[in-house]
Length: 285
Image (cartoon, rainbow, N blue to C red; front, side, top):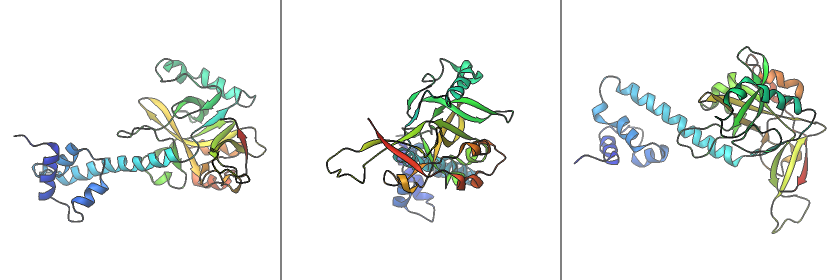
């Protein structure tokens, strides 16, 4: 009788168990690995020329999925899962540039949603984003919010600015593919610390840099099946919004946005310029 994938895995694992671990530890460290993949990696029949290289390759591939799962949890439980675009004089030229872009014209009808030009933006929406093109010039591109990773049910929408350069999911984007997402404000849900909120639902807040008309959210992007997708970077919150969440988006002043999208600039140099003094106003849900 042919063995099931689970039986192949268990038999192979018993014979060629890595010395540093045991069954329980391996199951804990690799909870999402497909059983067929487990059997293939540790099968005694694969112990031929190049077996060690195959293990290294497969484990590196799986490590990306594990890391992405961690980022998914971070991204979906962090902040900045909504922002808002007003019909303002500042944003109108950016929206119109996205509508005129060749990328948008060539892909009308092939992307999951129409270009969002105003209103509340959610993960999965197609929106105007500023980045450098192939010629190195600044341009506006329509991009989809969220990285998709095989094996994850939901897209990754955020990345931590402190660790993005170290994560396989974001490393290349951090170095070469940075973008700016123009918004009027971003939104967060929380309770007003000055009120007695016992038994009351959390309120929705519109948050923007003090005395600024545009909120320049910093992000990363990459191509997925030929179309750009982006994530929003986050950082520890400023004192004015720390009551809402322990994270906030990475927001730069407009004069630093061109440097942010320049792949020749070390992005770590710009992090100290992030805006943290915010105004938070309750809005209707």
